[in-house]
Length: 142
Image (cartoon, rainbow, N blue to C red; front, side):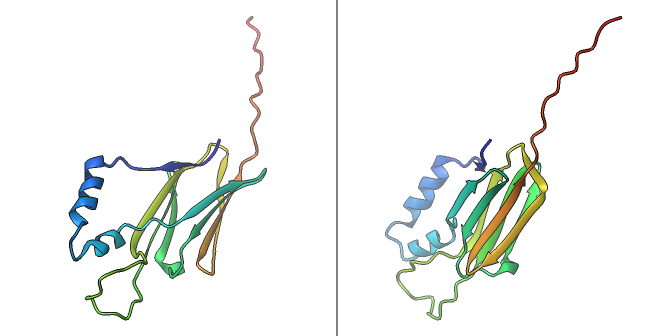
């Protein structure tokens, strides 16, 4: 079973309102900066699942990783380190809070999760549990 992205239900109309309310307004770039979803990759081998998140400019202390009810959640924030005043007209970098959740496969050993952060890349290693064979024992009726 593969990792699946968890996405809470959001109305499509909420998304359209965010987009259209920001068009042709002075603060349109500031609206989009509060919507930050870091890039991530998911891979696996015979023993582990691997998740890597690109979090440039984010400190370890600003990232939170948790597992609850078979859902892995990575959240955090990145603050602007811009030395400009608030009167700039365009922002290309995204800042703000982020949160991403994943349904964990049944064969994930939730007690064996390791995380490390190096050069702005967060790498999670989730160990796969040993497969449990479904042994069927026949019971005779007396």
